[in-house]
Length: 238
View 1 (spheres, rainbow, N blue to C red):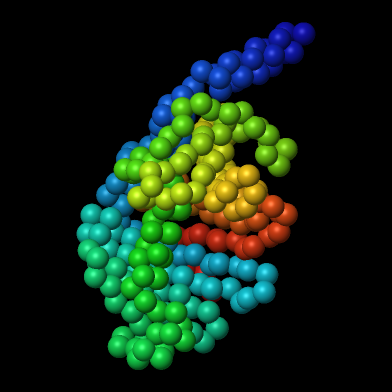
View 2: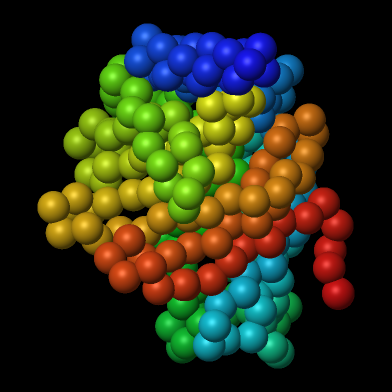
């Protein structure tokens, strides 16, 4: 009986806490879990990511991020094609199969452009910088926290939108109520249409004392169709 009472008290306290905690408070607790020493702001490191998709061979990427120097680099290998994109303080460089001055035809064939280089920079620094990136200017943190069940597990859910100049999507971040680890996130372009995707996170890889999701599995919201998985590691994988 004593054990049952203890469980009931714990369950009640979790419910009560989820009702009282604000969006800003939940975000701070999640950041404390993922980046306890505030290292992301001056992050300088290397990531290795294998992207696995159902209809393609894996793409292996080597990524360098140096936030203080405003430098980003990605070298991606798929089959016999090697592409490289770099952005340094707004300037970009491109290469394919070692050719650092590709022709317009090669650029078109392999989708090489400064716009794409900046897209990769924003994509990887945003996703691997979460939840810390939710402190960026233009991010609107909704203060009402929801308690939801997703894939049979309960979460504290933070809603995030953005100012017009930053983005139009609506995001939801799902945090473990026990340790505030980020375990799912989801975005919609038009929530009434149930479009967009959700991403299941599993495992952790600690790089420069920042806890990042090791596996990110992507699915469509509408029909749960599996899209692919990104697998993160500290070292290059064969």
